Image 1 (cartoon, protein in one colour):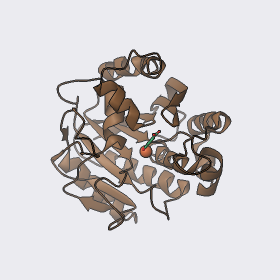
Image 2 (cartoon, helix red, strand yellow):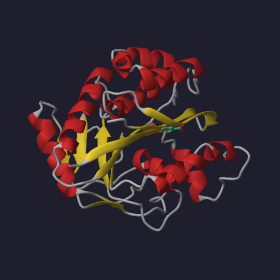
Image 3 (cartoon, protein in one colour):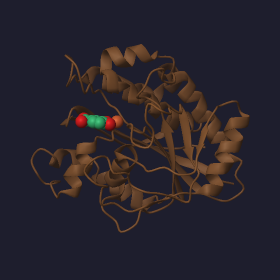
Image 4 (spheres, protein in one colour):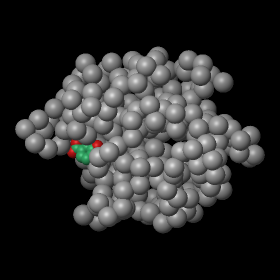
Amino acid sequence: MARITASVFTSHVPAIGAALDLGKTRDPYWQPVFQGYEYSKQWMKDNRPDVIFLVYNDHATAFSLEMIPTFAIGCAAEFKPADEGWGPRPVPMVIGHPELASHIAQSVIQDDFDLTIVNKMDVDHGLTVPLSLMCGQPEAWPCPVIPFAVNVVQYPVPSGQRCYNLGKAIRKAVESFDQDLNVHIWGTGGMSHQLQGPRAGLINKAFDNAFLDRLIADPAGQAAVPHIDYVREAGSEGIELVMWLIARGAMSDKPPTLKHRFYHVPASNTAVGHLILENNP
Ligand code: DHB
Ligand code: FE
């Protein structure tokens, strides 16, 4: 049986990818950001998964206003790093896991969650930056990755409650897959950021840290928070945080073990937040 053993949560700021690709990780501005992931890179080596189920959002890269799936699961054998306007990032191809992805699609759709099945998709910074933060700059990513894209760009976006419930359905799906696989689930995006308008640059450290506290200890309570609270308190792009509830919902009902917690401001226009939780089955 496959099982989810851990969840990883991290911001996916595109400028972090650029800093890494351009060799700026030791610059005074970026050094504290990358320092916060030193533990994580070692943890990844010590706890190498067989598959990563990676929840992220596409930023009008693979999708556009022409087509807006709320939840899209990548079932392809491979996914190319996207060209977001300045050429694709120099990172490895993302190898998928079509068998597990198709099984999860079957199970979750039969559990009444409408997923869009995607058989061809380029993956943007939302997916590649977390891989870079957790794995550094390898020749190949350490394992197959199932991309799971959530619409948090164009309203209406899914509620935190729906994301949390979807996570539970994903857990059930993984646990009914008949191969022995160690699966990690990642939630990405956030934390507080607002990229445009008079409030551009908004950072709310109190909100972010309360979110981290509650995501760890009271995820069901956090799931009840309406989307408007994220937008008001954490900025318009702070809504990306609802994706973390998918990964948290996929964890066991027992309290998880907190392995690592990191929070840093600034990184581009956002606060960077990061957690590693291990499952207690
Ligand atoms: C920024 C952060 C994001 O998460 C994103 O998707 C785009 C831009 C930023 O801080 O610039
Ligand atoms: Fe984003």
